[in-house]
Amino acid sequence: TQLLEQSPQFLSIQEGENLTVYCNSSSVFSSLQWYRQEPGEGPVLLVTVVTGGEVKKLKRLTFQFGDARKDSSLHITAAQPGDTGLYLCAGVSLSGYALNFGKGTSLLVTP
Amino acid sequence: KAGVTQTPRYLIKTRGQQVTLSCSPISGHRSVSWYQQTPGQGLQFLFEYFSETQRNKGNFPGRFSGRQFSNSRSEMNVSTLELGDSALYLCASSPGTSGIGYNEQFFGPGTRLTVL
Image (cartoon, rainbow over all chains, first blue to last red; front, side):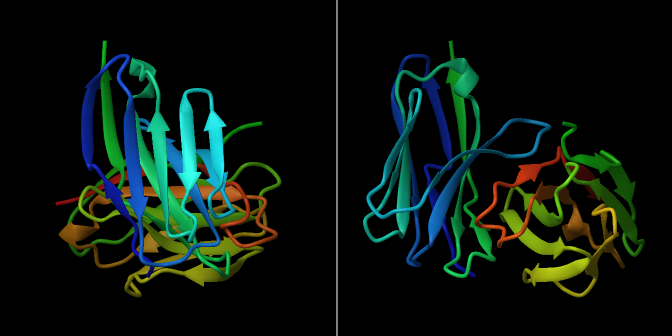
């Protein structure tokens, strides 16, 4: 099993602040996915990063894949209460047939 | 298009019992994956079925099993329940022609299992 460490585990911030969530591993992945999960629901895919060094933007969210394809980060600019949720990263194995999740970062954005 | 549905949404069982959970994928999706989510271990992969065949399996004991029917609906079964089996069980569907890492997975809302 390829372990993924996410940090921080919990984050509580005020509306308008910026934040970064990290996802690290000692293993190489073919790609990495980021999900957001809200209470009572399943995770929803936000983005997939494939190429080492790749940066993808989704409105106020910026995702980066490390050059060595072992780590990734999610940066949120000017967080809003609607960003509240559990953010999960998931590494796709080199075979493409395994998906290993980090334990998640629980984000709370208060008005 | 209807999303992934899971039944039941909540379940309470006692140690030693067995349980069967059901998942109906998005129409046209042939791959169904099952995951266990707990606060301590996070989201862990159980197994994936594609066209009625188990294509991939995680590191769970044999008490956890599954199957997929010809209409792509899937069930998972846990026998001889233990307290540690209390968790949110999620299923996800995808078109599935490639491995689960290469197709977007659509998750259901999960079944919350409590073992007393």
